[in-house]
Amino acid sequence: MTQQDRLWNSNYVKVWVANFMIFFSFMIVTPLLPLYLSENYQADKDTIGFVLSGYTLTALLARPFSGYLVDSFPRKVVLLTAYFLFFAFFAGYLIAGTMTLFAIVRTAHGAPMGSVTVANSTSAIDVLPSSRRAEGIGYYGLSNNLATSIAPTVGLLIYDSIGNYDIIFLLALLAAGIGLAVNATVHFPAKEIVPNKDPISLDRFFLLEGWSEGVVMACVGTSYGVLATYLAIYGKEVLGMTAGAGAWFAVLSCGLILSRLVGARSLKKGRVVENVNHGLLVSLFGYLLFAAWQSPVAFYGAALIIGLGNGHIWPGMQTMFINLAPNNKRGTANSTQLTCWDIGMGLGVVLGGMAIHHTGYSSAFWFAFIINILGVFLYFIYVKNHFVKNRLR
Image (cartoon, rainbow, N blue to C red; front, top):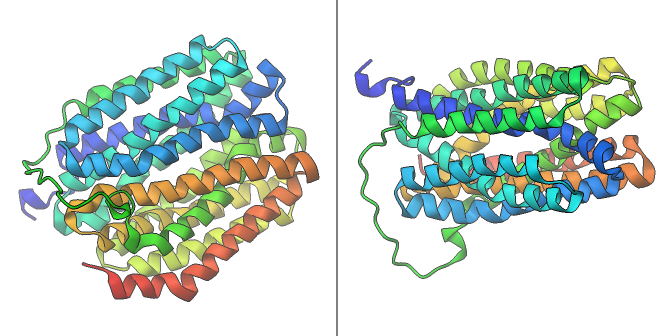
């Protein structure tokens, strides 16, 4: 193997660590926010869903423009600007003294979150050797998974021990600051930015070739949004598990990590479609288990199964988006996948909150399963064949 073919080169490691810090700072607060709003501001389920959906909405609006900026301007400038704003907004959580101010800060924070994830994932692709890109995409996702495993557990342990949300917000601010400092040392390969002189059109901001893959990602995101947002309250109110959410995310991440390691080897051999096939079917069973059986066994069993499924889905789908796009639209390809995920997550937060408020937890989780199965049907009926026919590499 030549030096140029090294997967774990120093720049890739730095971008990997920076991505871990993005998701650590994000996930240490996210599972606790419904409890925070309920305990500090006596918010009901509908209000919690409304407040938390604002973050997803602004992230969604920022994603397409972020892809355009990443493709049109120097990567590092866009990356560090987005990362600094993402870092700075955590300070707003500490100073917001009313629910209105908190809702404003949380909603505004979505824009830099949407931007920095696009910029960082595109940067990872830039510093990977082309011969190992699919494999590298798989391992890159491990940083998300490890953060998803560790951060909620840390946050919930602090909550259970001292009940101090400010400490949790400070840890999020610190983690984001570390990631910003690490990314400042990344060296990107020299690349000329060629101005796009074509008229402004939708395909500058959204990868039209990947629309059907995007619908599948939105379905997956909706299902996950329902569970991830409301499982802490569900575990506490229905199953009597105060710290159940932390363990749930830890079990989920064990499944994600295991499937990422297996899937990365499969992606290295070009088995992109097979990865997504297996992931969707496995994950679907996890949502069925969560909806059909109201018990701690199903609670944690579903976490492991969904993790095993999603660990195949994410890198496989990201590789699909990248392989459908020309090289000068990598940022747009990444932003399209994340935009569709955000649409799904936002729908999951809002519709899940409405379902829980009016008809209970069971109907919300069955809704998550039904949306997931619709995405699976679309994938097997149309999407996988569409990808094979239209892929560029």
